[in-house]
Image (cartoon, rainbow over all chains, first blue to last red; front, side, top):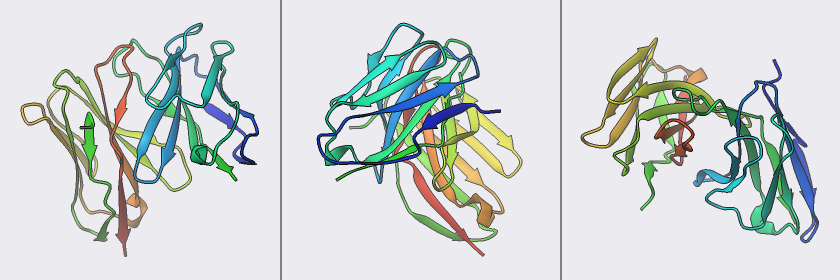
Length: 114
Length: 111
C-alpha cells in the first residue's frame, strides 16, 4: 500500500533556484493538500485542491504555485527559493465530502534553502 | 487569535503516567475533532476522531470534546516510551471544508 508518495525526500537549493515537489496518491481521493511544518508553528496549509480541476490558496501561499495534474497527482513549485522556505513539506489527501474524511499524509520532503 | 490553540510543550513524563493533552478553539461550528500522532521524521497519522460532543475510548486513549467550553482533550493512560511523539489536534466543519490544526504538543515518555 503506497498511500501518499512524495518526491524528493531531501533537497538543498541555493537562493533563487526553482524546484518542484511531486505528490501522488493511489487511494482515489478527491482532495489533496500541501502543508509546511516549522518548529513551533504546526502544520500550515499552503495550497489545496478540493477536487480535480480546482486549486485554492491556503494560509501561506506566497512564493508557491501548484498544479493538480490529474486526480492522483498534485505538485508544488517554488519559482525562486528563499531561505524562509526552508521547511518540511507534507502532501496529504482525503476523500472529502463523506463523513470526517481522514487526511492521509506522505512522509515529508525536507527542503533547505541556502 | 488562532482558530485552534494548542500548548506546544514539550511534555516529559515517566512511563506509566497519565497524560493529558488539550486544545481550545474559537469556531463553535466545528463538528469533527481529531487527534493525529506524528513520530519523528514521519508524516502525521490519525489516532482518534470524535463527531460533535462526548467521549471516545480506544484502548489506552480517550478523546473528550466539550463544545460548551470549546475544549478538547486526549488522555493517554499507562503511557509507554512508544507513545513519545508529537500530538496534533485538528478540527473541521466536515464535508469539503479544510482541517484546522493546532501547533502540536511534543510528548516524551521516559522509562
